[in-house]
Image (cartoon, rainbow over all chains, first blue to last red; front, side, top):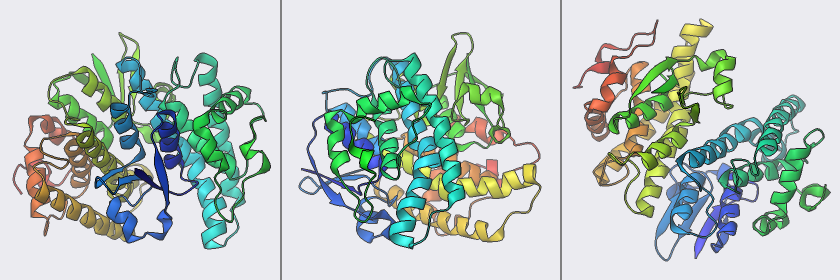
Length: 223
Length: 223
């Protein structure tokens, strides 16, 4: 069986778990703390990052969330998540990358640093200035998601796609780390509630990062 | 015709230009300075980054270098660059991402900041400490490329692939900005010379960033 090397709040592992859930691919979890820089993780992935998907029996290792998602898209027909014509597929990949890179860099990465790493590892208080800037940038991203939801059925077009999974994965980590202020973002909130209600999302909502409980509303299916 | 919005030292635009060159896709260049944050670029790409590929006649816009490379891989049969079985394609995408993300973050991004942005825009001197750390990390990446070349015909497997283009694109920018110390990296140097000799590479070697001439050896086809 596939072993997914990850930690509970890794947004890229969450994106992959949502995809594997939608495609009914079985896996078991192997806990990693990438910030410890352990040799075992670097040996599996020269980038030293999660997620890594490893099958010890077949001696196969896959790295990088997007490369792994493309792999399952090519090998598992069920519930295609990069579908449509070439232009539609380019739009799905553009948005997936926007969430993986810009939403992550602007919001999820500082949230993880200020609220997870400082609390659990560095034993420091979060920097209010960084958190305020993060909130401001999150607001801009939610505006863009509102606009996407207003103009399309799903974020990248007429069908649920990897872009929805990538965005929901990032937001779920931000939500875990302190909740999201949805005021003024009804469309984004409604879309996120639909995503949260999917069976593929359930395993994420019940998983906890030790020493860092989520807010009460994190796992609630209404807001 | 496609218009490629880019600047001469954008490594991701270079990766795309190499792919379009290999596939004989015609395009014209439109100069952008993403650091100026102009509305026109943000309107084309909500991530505010180059490359953007735009066709005004067809009113079509593609963003993100990887999404655009996948688009041409799907629509232009000539010279496939993500080929082989699903596992080989995953390896090509893993390495492409490693170069796009880690080699860029460790080496190209600080080189662009210290040697291009500080000189042309901020009018500051480069920080020697940052440059030394960059050199140390580049050495590690070249070690890994040596190992890849030792064990495979091309970086990701038996055929030239997008991973070779992505890696050569990053290194070409670093090389432009001050040369690469190849000592102890014969395999990586030989591979890079082969890449530099490809017709798809030629347009990059002759293009200059105004106010920032490359070293004399930059365009030379022997080292």
